[in-house]
Image (cartoon, rainbow, N blue to C red):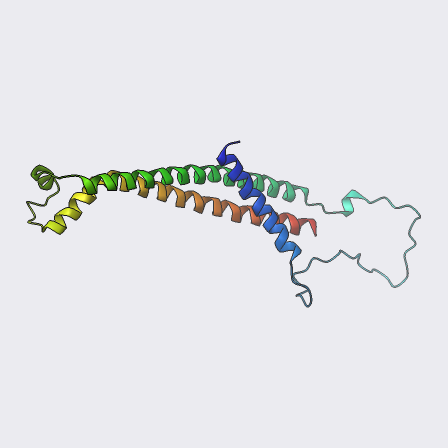
Length: 187
């Protein structure tokens, strides 16, 4: 199984279990009754008791299932789940590429530190034209030498951050849909 598939499934399951955990650990005791779901009670139309039949079949028109709203929220939840999955794959990709980029940077940095630079290299780095000291020129030569690897690290770090932000945004949408479905089923 691919690492990205395992990671995306793990993130999705962690989200689902965290929502279940938070619901199971809800505080008990005094709670605001306005925020608690209540069972629907039939309106009292008169003070005398209604004679109920021995067998009662529920009339579908008496129950508001909000099927359209539930279906709409389920479609949105599915899109959010797919978004999380896609971004999880991007996170895995950028993480692996960042790991490789850092390794490449370290190797190149060691190579650049041990390299003997010519006068031509110093001219290309701007050491001669800017009349830099040995220390300043050494830094300039080093930064020029590792510039490609540094740019790759910045690219992958940015991609990783963007994918993480997008996954977080999708997770918020998924939570919103889940809460809407819960609230709809309590009506």
